[in-house]
Length: 179
Image: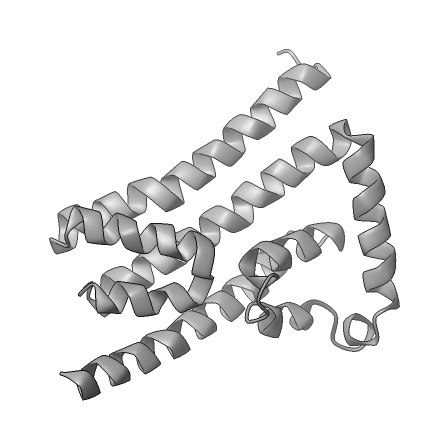
């Protein structure tokens, strides 16, 4: 088996693409088939999740996508982003001196943070809500601090699911008031 650095880089990129395609394309496609949701509405919702993260649920509910498919898509999206970004970071941090330098400086700053010192990995749960950080930033922080195991993924997914459920509840409440 070829274990050259180039081969490992392609393997990491392939793994990242596989996770991202599964969670961002295949699972939403399965919800279209299983729940009979509109294809364009479903993928419009997925596109909004890429940008708005949990707040995109408002778009999904507004498009008439039922709560169960919305949460299935949000869960698959969260898992795909977590594992996809971990694979991307693992692949490129080893290859890029520039990226390694910047990640090291972010790690040094974060280690000085009293919030991280006091609450550790649990700090990631509320970070899901911070604009500009959200799921993507939490995954990067977890990668930097080497919180990549089941515990790290579980904490990130807990924050993601909680935020998604809160927004879903609010969106359903607003939509029922409007109708």
